[in-house]
Amino acid sequence: MTDVKKTKVDQATLKKIAIESLGRLEIKGSDADAVADVLVMADMMGIHTHGVARILSYGERIKVGGINAKPDIKVRHSYPTVATMDGDNAIGPLLGSKAIFHSMEMASEFGMGMVFVNGSNHFGPIMPYSFMAAEQGYMSFIASNATTTIAPYGGTVPKLGNNPLGFGFPHPKGEHFLLDMALSTVARAKVRAARDQQKSIPLDWATDANGIPTSDPNEALSGMLQTIGGYKGYGLALAVDMLAGVLSGAAYLNHVKAWDKQPDQPQNLGHFFLTINTKGLGENDWLGERMVDFSSIIHDTPPIDVNNPVQLPGERELRALRHHREYGVAYDTQQLWALQES
Image 1 (cartoon, one colour):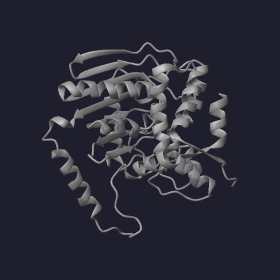
Image 2 (cartoon, rainbow, N blue to C red):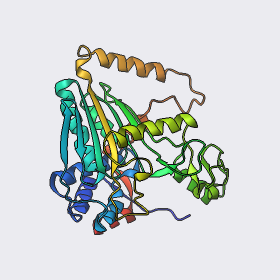
Image 3 (cartoon, rainbow, N blue to C red):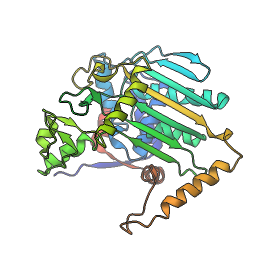
Image 4 (cartoon, rainbow, N blue to C red):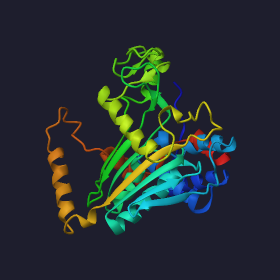
């Protein structure tokens, strides 16, 4: 296998490249800045599958009319703490950024803010949004629906997406609890990797085209992913679609268009953002002391492998963030070139 050539780039340079690439797609000013912040943060956290390189696929859809580069985004308030954002088919990270900050704006005044988003597209990973909120002292619960890749439990036809959800809890020293997870047992990329390595896969990863669990990655790639915990993961995926799709006014289940099969069609994805202003829950050091104690209890757990201590969700990504801020990111040279030439 040929090694991928890498180029070291710092955070500011990566953001500059992102903003310039977005500008060539007619996404400029504060909108480009907001989108770049989300995607650059993904790369800084080591989540390169959802980082700045995503602009390339977003751009392909903008050019064929599948994403609106100049949307008329509108916010409607149902209650002082509940709003719906009509996205007008905007690029997903722009709506995600606007939604999390609007949610925090409501929470700063009323203690809690909830934003439903419709008319959206792929909005990147959840963790950058949770991190933004945690840095300002807000707890967050974020969810999105997605293109259909999973069959209902016991079924043979995909009807729901591998819907992600995430939680963020602020820590006084920046060691935030950040959980970002989709509801399949593994990502499809792991199935592809097993195929490329000519290895079998566990039976709880995926099914064949008839919905039967398979250990053959080739059959799995023609079939469907399985949810974590069987019917429990299926139930969670449905609940996420209720929040992000049904209640938001967005598409849901197989009403969601597949971006790779119909790139010129709006997906009408839906998202859900909830934040709580933790500053009002106790005295100044109250939550901080509890978070430190909570983390210590987990970290003090004797590990199975002494070389792999027990961790909390988000610790790996926060270590990557600190490392990349200091030393830069080793980025795929070809992708950087493509971004600069797009």
